[in-house]
Image 1 (cartoon, one colour):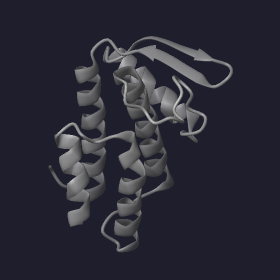
Image 2 (image 1 turned 90 degrees about the vertical axis):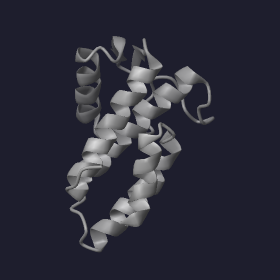
Image 3 (image 1 turned 180 degrees about the vertical axis):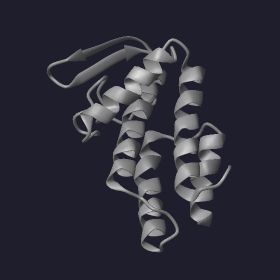
Length: 137
């Protein structure tokens, strides 16, 4: 359980990146096997969505991984309906704007305020982890 605190600290310090998601998933899977948390396929799908939305911020900010393409969720997200739900929520909260979807599997949107976007994403992840571990961080 101490290992998850490293990632929570990265979230709190705004240094958590999309490349950290596979690492946190490994910790969550291990903690689930130990019986410390209930970690479902839906939880894993939500972390895929976090990966995508973090990748889009990284693209907008500059330091994105080479295999990441603007708006292309197909390599990252298995549950399109969950991605649409999160993007709709972000649009309603005005964290993103000008959302458009293409039939080819692309979700394009503008990020008007990168700091607000990062804060929103970090808050989603923090709340999700709090729920999994049933605690307040």
